[in-house]
Length: 83
Image: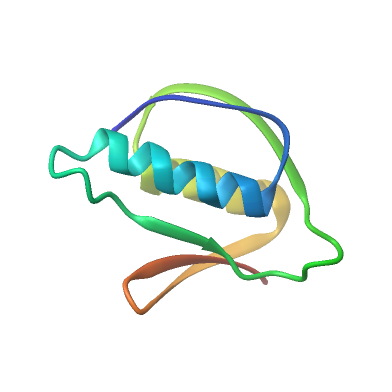
């Protein structure tokens, strides 16, 4: 469970890095989930949100629906990629 997720016009590549940090902080083992931006480097969407007590899976569902992306899993990491 992510205690607080707050982004203001943050580019998706930065969102991915921040989610990796937040998931590690929320994980008792400290490992968390690696989230990787796998979209185009020249046209990175931005995202804003302010949520509390949200699961990573629920947050990723909201995020991807909002920006027209999808998630996939590769080599143990969650990828954010265009649909």
